Structures are given as C-alpha cells and as structure tokens.
Length: 435
Ligand code: SAH
Image (tube, rainbow, N blue to C red; front, top):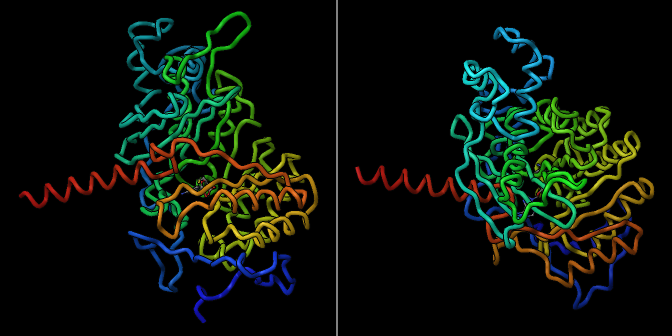
C-alpha cells in the first residue's frame, strides 16, 4: 500500500488509540519526507547512508586550545622557556582573544614569533560575514586549513549572547530536511577548531562588531559569548571526544579555558543513544537537547535516518536517564513541517511518551522549519503551530516556540556552505567549459 495514501490522523500507536479531534474537515494530509533537487545517498539495502567515520582523517596542526594547561607548559619548556609563559600565552588567547605575536608585549621580543607559530597555527579564515536583524545576528563562513567550509552564527538576545557552533565539516546523519546533510561528512573538526569559533566571536564582540558593546568597568564585565549551542554543522556526538574536550575547555577556568558556565552550553544530538548515556556520565552540567522531530518511528525512520539504529523509545529513555543523572531538564527540538509532523495526534503522542517517563524532566522547543517555500518542506501554518504548542502545554509539557534568526542570511545550518559550494561548483564548471 502506498504510505502516502494512509491517513495518519488516526494511526494507532503500539495498539493504543491516539486521541484525536474528530475527523472531517479537520483531517489533514500526511506529506512524506522526500528530497528535492538532490539525491539522498543510500546503501545496498536501500536505506539512507549513515557515516560515522570521516573520509578525511587529517586534522589541523596542534593548537594551544587542543592542549591542557599542563601540556602547554611542557611545550613551552620544550621550547626553552619557563613554564609561566604558557599561562601568558593562554591569557592572550582565551582572555584577550588574540593570537597575534605583535600584541604579546609581555613575551620576550625575540621569541614572540616562534611561540605564536608553535601555539597558534591559523585555524579559521573568515570567508564571509553576513549581518542581519539590525546587527544583532552575524553569520560567519570559515575556511579551515584544508579548504573545508564551516559556519557559526552569533546572536544577541536581551541579556545573553549566543553562538551556534559547528562540530563537524558536513554531517553523516543524512537527515533529508537539513542542508548540512546533503553533502555528507568531510571530517571531524578538531577541539581547537571548535573552540576557535568562540574565541573569534568574542573578538568580534570586543571590537564592537555585534552592535553596541557594553563597556567594561563600573562592575560590569566586558560582553562576550555566554551561551553556546552546538547546533551548527555536524552531529556533535559522532565527534564525541573532540567535542567533549572542547566543552570541558569552554567551562574550564581562564586561562586554561574560557571560564564559561556549563549550564549555558547546549549539546544537541540527532539521538545516538549510547553516546547520550556517556554524556550523562561526563559529570558536567551542560544542557542536553534531543532533535526528535517525530514521536512515531514510522515517520522518524524517514525523517531522521539514524532512527533505524536507535528508535524513539530508546532515545527518550536515554534522554530521561540524562535527566536522572544530571538533574538538568532536557530539551526536545521539534522542527514543525507542514502536514508532515505537525498533526495534533503527534502532539498528543509526544506528550504521552514524555509523560510516561515522568513529570518535570523535559520541555519541548518547536521551531518552524527553515523552509524552501512550496516544497514538501514547508513550515507549519501559524494556526497549526499554535495548536501543536497548546496541546503539549495542556498535557503538562512546558513548550515554547523558538524564534528563528537570520532566515534572510541562510540562517539554517549548512545553507551558507551549501550555497558557497554551489557557487564553487558553478565556477569550476564554467572554468572547465571555457577551456
Ligand atoms: N546534529 C545535531 C546538531 C546540529 S542541527 C542535531 O541534529 O541535533 C541543529 C538543529 O537544527 C537540529 O535540531 C536540526 O534538526 C535542526 N535543523 C536542521 N535543519 C533544519 C531546518 N531546515 N529547519 C529547522 N531546523 C533545522
């Protein structure tokens, strides 16, 4: 039977009848995920390919941010200098956001250049900076040492500054609605490449690049990124070790690290259940977000290919275990896609599945899909969105609609790299044809 013809409005789940509103004029169609304008990579079994290992293994040269303070000290000693120089170098990088030897006037003049060379190989080169929301949102496109492109997005909100960082070049999770997944995984980002996104953003803020910066002094600290979401390109838990080292270093006291509050750091995953359990054992109170997007395996299998490995119930159990272990309330991310995952019965089913695992441990963040209008991937209407949110709230699940920033600058992760890649492909094509 053609699954597109099924009316999912009344689908029973696990033998249980789902509460729905009466059918009739309100019965809504079920759009099924399908790629448009690109073909999803599939394996011999016809299923979307999942890439856990990166095709490119070469990592950038070791950088100060890859090392613990002790390792930095050992390296400084190796270079024939007393170990306190490591702290000075760390301060320049993590507190003054500089890796420019000319600015390191507290270091011996004749050694500045070779110290900078040893500790600060260039990691991120700015390719493009797009500013929107009256200067409150900046999207950066960075080129890495091997030509790979990644993005980060800096957003000023009342009372906080958020940076959305990338954790991999590309992504191997192959979700059909996500721009990053389309090109597959190139490689894991190094710990220092992940951290350098924050340091570069802090430098831009300090230079006044994110609107009017608050002045330091009179008891006020200088402004900097105080909220991090690992929701840029890549699947953070597929690059577990480097991402977690970066997260620990964000939270480590300066000048070992950035001295940020772990609570202001959100790690988001598509649902690698064993890695979620490992994250719970890290003993660091980061905020954990699960990109669920569908409460039923039937749809989630198609929407989130990794669901073929770890099913909805399994990832929800792992998410609940995260709460039990850390006491940190879990966020469920849910991109609302018109007629695909936004049915009232899905809001009810989601609430049932969350309530079945206890109260007060979770909240839901629906976010309108960042769409290509007119395709099967279109964001839900305002009314449907409101009903989805209301039903969850009515069922006792705290639910807040997330705003979308930077739509007009290809705000959704991976879109900028994708369009840059298109341009590069077009240029290469034109060059090839001119020969
Ligand atoms: N791989 C991780 C983190 C990166 S994606 C994860 O899946 O959680 C960050 C968030 O953006 C995820 O919730 C992802 O599902 C969502 N996302 C991806 N493409 C989107 C789009 N076109 N519109 C809205 N959200 C999107």
